[in-house]
Image: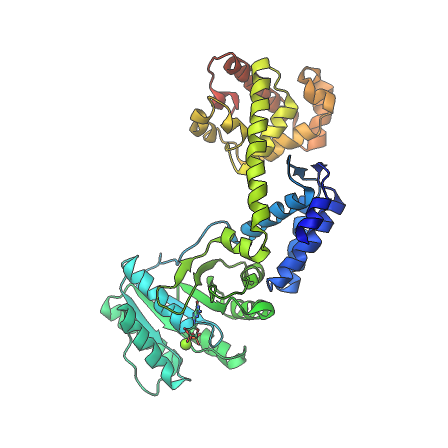
Length: 437
Ligand code: GDP
Ligand code: MG
């Protein structure tokens, strides 16, 4: 039924508001089915809507499919484009405080992380259970510790969580440990006593990481849990457990959205080695449940870009690279975060990439240059020779820049056009010089 809607929208060109709204209704449903919190889904969709309307639809893709791809990319960006691991950059012993609701997987995850830090990062880790409420909890951590070959703090009956935390840090200092992991007690629901205790432990142990361990199947409650823990304890990251379950992981988006804190790791099973890095694209696919459409659009985009590169090469050969082409290039650069765009695909230019990178074309410069071109008329873009002093003044005013900036852009374009012309004829030129910085 999903594809029915997407196939119905087969106009090409820029995405209209109706295209976007129709597709976003489906996306909204997918997000809610994945258990993304309502308020998070709503604000996410509003954000995507404003990005998507007017975006170009690439050839051989329907507007609906295009929207899905835009949603997917935005989802990946929101989840955190890159994986962030546990941060151990602090004087030893580095404290890691594990917090979360009861049954979320704190104790298991503590052992998993300890195993990883011991085996992969070659750190000496000390584990301590601060769970004074459940008699078996300390024993559970000791057993898991033994299983992963990591030491645990000896159990002393009758101590409070804060006392144990103090003792753990002291033991780690004396024993020359690199890392101390503090596994705290959880409650079935959020409550003040739990938060207070965790806050006291934090004050005593001064942990470098405060990790919220959260069940990925939590659903709508994820927002409240994450907000409460972050507000009270200042989280540094989140670990999502039970990603091996059949939930779609909407909690990942909810928690990330309300705390802004990175999801550092995911638990994928009961065994002590079932811990993985967080892969935003994978999770985005799972939340959206439209991986097929996303890869279809990605493939289409590749051939679309190749097509455009070919046309650009043709323009080069003819020496007709105008300001509209330049704007196209700037948009590509912005989209791809650098010179990975069309220019990079042109013969001869790939080799000069490092030179281009050093030409200092940062985001702000690209935005300013684009604004300048946007302030020109179509005629002016196609024929830059028209740009005399009075027009330049108008363009500078329209784009919030100075005439000097307009001149710079025109010079850059002229040099690029010349270089391209000579390259088109088989010659060579320094593109970095052409970019004029
Ligand atoms: P705690 O109360 O937060 O300390 O939670 P525990 O670490 O004791 O875990 C509660 C239960 O969840 C145990 O049965 C664990 O084996 C299980 N568990 C923890 N993490 C995962 C996970 O990533 N996947 C699955 N399937 N089970 C998990
Ligand atoms: Mg526990």
